[in-house]
Length: 126
Image 1: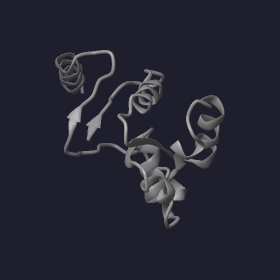
Image 2: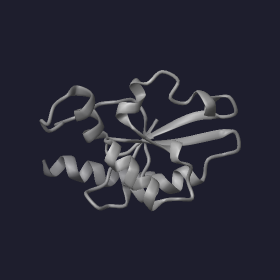
Image 3: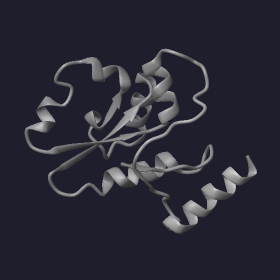
């Protein structure tokens, strides 16, 4: 699992769409959206993708949400706006203050070294 950390309007969703386009043969990359509205907006704006590639968090409660796709491809999920997805899962509108996870940094457009440096500078300011 990789993490992309950027500020608001920093190109995170655009980078995720590119990640989806670059799926290798035999793999289906799917964007998990924080709401049905967001998923519908993504489908409308990005018609080169199949509608099943934008899934609202609510649909994960449906059994067999990917059953047809899984027959022919490996499913790999990308979560857009993790903070909002977590709020939906937790049923809260409270801010998510900190998340820890195991993975690596993915910083589209920059090297990992630059990403780690930027993250370090951020934490030194705080």
